[in-house]
Length: 187
Image (cartoon, rainbow, N blue to C red; front, side, top):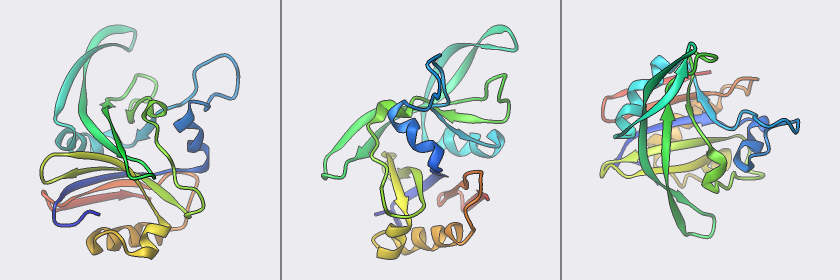
């Protein structure tokens, strides 16, 4: 998968504490809430690449600094491949920062996507891939994928560098934009 037909890949490492986000069980108390979205920081680095990868725009009312305002979400219908070879489609939304987390954009409500994180495949990443036809795919890339060489060598070489960095408390995240010839990684 991936290669010359890919415009950009946005990624975030899935940490052990993130796994419960996929099943909406991230709250440790019965009071509700819980961080169920994936945050990308700093927002300034990700804003432009998400704007290119998710071409839809949706205005939503939100409260910022105690004031009701309208914010713009980036959206796209994404294909979500399943382990059995089938795929589903859902609308993915990238939201700008909240007042409480001013430097973080986020993918919200990932628990509603039916994602199947790889088990026993080493460290892995959630990927948002935009191809040359403007199709967007939401999938995973693991250490096992790197070892198998099933992805295009450009993608494998990129993630080989990312995986060479020891895992830390914070998730490695970033993007590679083949169209703009840029990349950025936060280790």
